[in-house]
Length: 333
Image (tube, rainbow, N blue to C red; front, side, top):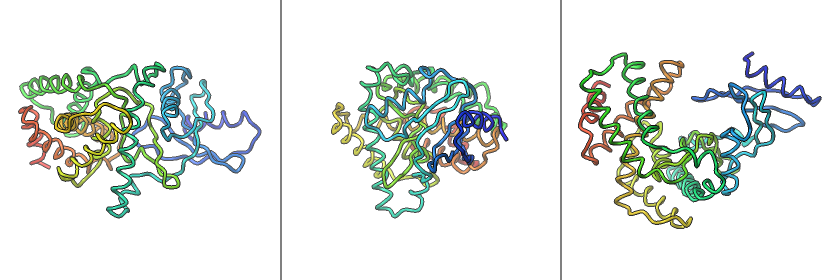
């Protein structure tokens, strides 16, 4: 029994109500999740590695913000700061990623379009985030954060996973290009983003989508969550025409939500620049999770991410050092 499990039992034993506990499988999380049966009802317990202060706890803060924006999230039912536990509504086990894999093309497209609608709704909550002084409004995909993620990719893909560090010359060229990319994206970081809006962080209950794992929300590019939804953890690359249609949908839904219009051509450029950064960040995560934490099921997604980045770079016509490195990795795969 883990220390997380023991703390949850201590929390539950403060009541004389009988309970049963089922451990759930986390993904790339440092938290542990459990389903708790009490009073013939189930709830989800999220157990954190350490105690927290409620007013500074990002999950509690962002959940409150998202609820105020009418976004579908599991309700917070209780929490214990000392034991580091948050109890939330049980919204079931149906993960959107699994549903997409087994759905007809028509159903799949409808579900993705619904999810894109949620992205527009999240972005429409930007003003509320500022007004509430939400933690999410005080975090941003600035140059420092974006470069850190790119450096995380470089370290954990080439050194940790491949065990083949790059030369000083290549590293120097990449550092300059990482800085340039991050500086460009920082200028676009002005709307509320989920930050990890992929199909494993969306659940279905009675045909309604629910958002989970939203505690890292922050300000970022209008393209950030769309890149994550459409391109994270895929093995077959979508067509440029399909991506363009999904970009247009988000732009239209943004306007319907009262947000200012964005030029389609400008947004396509923003989407490609964000694709490079976000997909390389994903490669870093997959490399770390597989090499350090033994989660080798992430490995099949690495090469497709590189091919997606390469496709974006071909349309950007910049970042020659990065393009050369990516081409080499694709050839050797």
